[in-house]
Image (cartoon, rainbow over all chains, first blue to last red; front, top):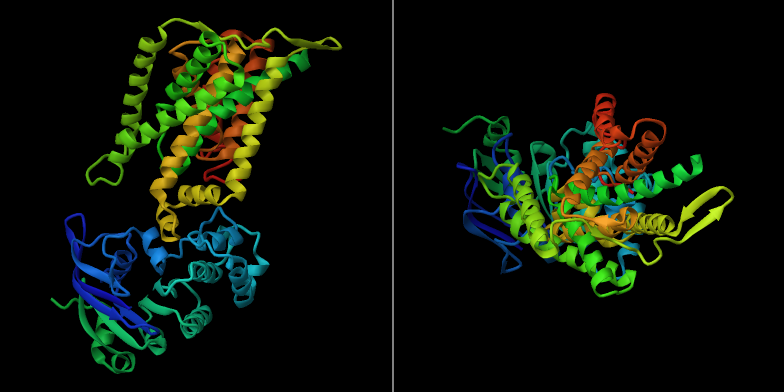
Length: 236
Length: 291
């Protein structure tokens, strides 16, 4: 479904991604693991269109989407839940969700809203409240619900467990699993290696901008090198 | 006497609010002070004079023409002065500010050529119509100005609060990157914002012309500085702050003239900024475009 071929990305003169290639199969959950500064967020930004790669290409459903803007990629069916959630703090919970469906022109938006409120009753309770007044876990749920409102084929999640209490983290991973079961493909970036791999089918390990390992999730779970990457030891 | 001055103050304040709205919309979305807004506003005023005086057309035609011309000026401003500087590596964040100053100088000089450099009288057809309510005299032109301003403010608030485009504008103002991730074509929203802000400036231009019965090429600067003062007072990028700030400034100026010394009238705006910034550095209403 998604094929990333040899992308290089820079922040100014610093190369952050070095020849990254990865693949996400339709219907699967794929995780990218790595320590802080490994290039996980940059990878997500490049796939979602916030950053343009200098080299390489990105194919989605067989179509080259490398140079598209984020709003064009949303229309193609790629939605990103960004790092730090990025809730629109000055807009209400309902408005945040409506913004998720911004590009849609069908008449099932209200129906989807109802479905979101059913799945996340806390959002229904806070419907009229400003997004900025929610707790971290609620904001994460809102961010995920908002992304789903765009009806993505591929959902990108950038560190959904960051800064959340362990109980809430478990909740979030359960939600990710559920979303996947309804037919949405998921690409996940995490530092929380164990929990992420448990819900995933496949994993990649990123270290200082390069992919150093990949494999089926259960294989990676038993691989000592994963812990090494997770702790962020430099390979050089 | 008091009520008459209150009406004067509200009329002036509602015009200030409309001028400030143009500043605050652009600041909210782009994070820059549009120094050309005052001159776009002045252009709107001159177009109004031309249409009413030279072609003897009714007032609504003047409004239409002024909105059209200032909207086009806004489009040019965004396309040629702002967009080329956006997201370019190595471009200072002050560059767009300087660029709008360039546009403002250009527009002021252009208006000298097109309209002449002196004062032009602006005569609304009903300028002399007034009502006597008890001992109070109210001019029709004041009512028209006030009503148009209120309609504009209410319409803008509803548009920002209820429509899809308005919500997209607020999302873009809050976080450009997030808005684009939600499918908003932020380039289009930015262009739309500059166009709408400029057209609001054009309406304000005619209202000022009606209120002061004259327009001149320098009016953009002084009105621009006041608009700036108001959005600092109300909170940069805040729509409600611009409206409230405009009314506060208009009333304050009017009452200073009545009960104080008219020489200090123009100093009020800037005195108010200093005081407000000392007490509430974020302005009366804080940031963000909310409804």
